[in-house]
Image (cartoon, rainbow, N blue to C red; front, side, top):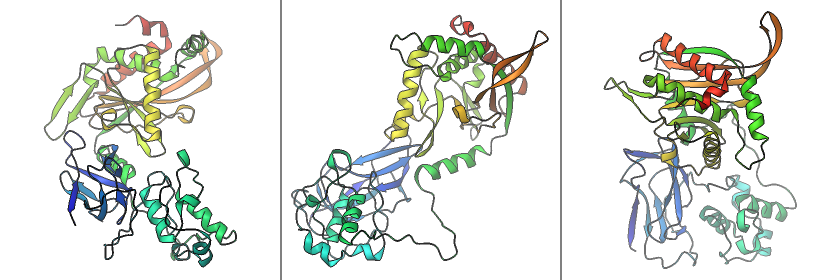
Length: 417
C-alpha cells in the first residue's frame, strides 16, 4: 500500500483555514486525478478541490462542518490503485464517515429498510458494471445496495445517475412503496447544525452587530427615471435590459466623488481607515445557498449597459454556485435591494469592514402635493445605514441627498465625470 495524504491547498490570499461543506467521495471510493473530491468554504466563497493523484480513498480527515487549516491533511488515498475505472469494494476495517454527500444529488436514503436491498432487487438486477455516469457517493451506495448502475436510468445532466434514481429503483422493486420513512424527533424539535454559508452569514452578522449603526431614510420620486429606463429598454438595440440597479450604481459613484470618506473600510483593531479611489461596489444577492455579495469592480467606469451585463453575470454565478472567491471579496461599499419585495423601509446591516450600505426599497404609487395640487407619483425609499464611528449624520444626509438629486433628475447622471 502506498498511502498518500491530500492536504488542504492555499485557496485564497490570507486564508488560514477552510470549512468542509461537502464530501464528494467516501471511504473505498476510487478517485481519479483532477476529479473533485470535496468543497470547502473560505470567507464567503465555496471552493471545489480537485485531487492531485489517483487512488482509493482510505479515510477522511474531517467531517462536514469541521474547519481544516491550510496544509493539514484532508484525506488519505492508496496510490497502488491503477485506475478508478476498475471498481473495488470498500476497504475492510475502514473508519466510518457519518457525513458524506454528492453536491448535486439528493441525500441518500438513511432508513434501515432502505440500507439493505430487498431480496428481489438483488435477484432481478445484475451486479458488477460501474461504468455509468455517477458521483462517487452514488457509486458506493449502489454497491452497498447491490444495484448495477448500468441498469438504472439516470435523470441527471448527461444521464448522470442520482440518489433519487436509486430510490426510484428501490420503489419499483418494492411494488411502489417508498423505502424512505420520515423520522420525527421524540420531542418534536428538529435540530440542525449550521454549516457552510449559513454559518458564515451568522458569524458575519454577529460581528456586524457590534458596529454602531445609524439608518437614514429618504424618499425619492422616480417617475422621470422610470420613464427614461422604459425608453432605453424599448430601443430594441439588443443591449442588456436595464433594471434600476445600473442607474443607482451610476448615482452612487458620482456622489462618492464628493464624499470619498464613504468609499472606505475601517479596521477597528488598528483603528485605521482605508479610503479607495476606485469604487468596488458590492451587490447583495439572495441565492439558494444564502446571501452573497458579488463585487462590481471599478464601478466608476463603464456605462449603464456594461454594469447591467456584469451585475446579471455575477448574480447568475452566485445563484449557480460557480462564483469565485475573488468575485466575492474586496468591496468598498454595498447596495442591497429586494426588488419588488423591498418593503417600505428597512435597516440594512453594514457589510463590514465597509462604513456604508445603501438599501433600496420597492417603488410604490403615492399621492403627493405638487405646486399645491395632488398628483400621483412613483416613490422609492432609500434606507441606508452608516458606521457612526466614521460617518457623521450630516455627511450621510448630504450623500443621500446627492443620490436623490441624481435619480430625480436623471439627466444629471450623464453630465458628471
